[in-house]
Length: 407
Image (cartoon, rainbow, N blue to C red; front, side):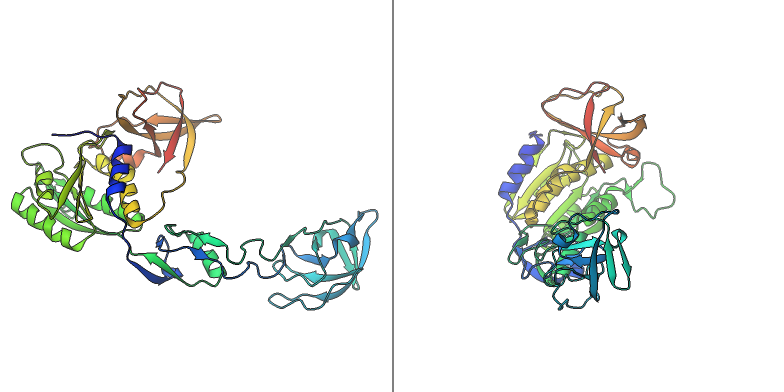
């Protein structure tokens, strides 16, 4: 029998009960993309460590250029050229300029750079046709990152740009939390391997095993698709117990509904110190979802319908596993504003996830609901994103402006 709980309650309760994984290890930054930091990263130096130019031009004292114009240029003597990668040692005096390239080190005494486009250099006599202010076209020492500044905090998931700034700081090893290991097991007498070329009547190729595993890997979890188990209590019991010993999380796809052959809940409760946290979530699609713990391991029963399985993975299971690993939740999801093409029915007390396909009408974006059943997988493939109808809202009317969360 289901005991339905709202999505937010399910996620918060599970986060509160399941302990974070605390094993960490050092990895090279080139292998750290998507990893979760086990500690704060603190800068050991200023970045840049010297003032440098953002343009090709001439390092000057800004005061020497005041009043410069095309009709009345300033004139400075070019005394030096600063080579890339070399220290600028020669001090700059009033009435002088030094040639500099983008990224070059400013010489002592200079405080601005005049872009080359606003100058003319004839026999080391520089004409300046546009004034600059102090600090113009210059990145000051420590302007990007200051020494002892916290660059990233514990729980941050490293992105490509993060790897780059770590390299720029000379940080080549980072301590990360070991990734969560996940086993994905599909169940059902009707399921066959996708390599099956000719299906018999009643057979379907397993999709959930592959799509759920792909979803997990995209989120940088160590996910293994471990195959199909038929609807046999003993076989499924033994397989789940075996996987429980090897993985942090076991996901069982299918068998979560209340029915004679849906025995997932019974088997989960035979695990050591099993605690059934959820059997039924107020979400559409995805209501018959099971979440349980066993000695701080997570065991999940997903609905067999492919759309339901992925919706639950994204909106319920993913934030729980992220919390288990100690990852901070994302500050926001990419969204666009759009106008709904037709009325959408929903009921209060339940979160509805509506797949939509987007198009343009003039300068407006139109969101067309793909109101198919949970077993129609193509609705996910056709969708550009989805609308979330919260528990407190009873439907959305045509032409309403909504947030579309992009896939």
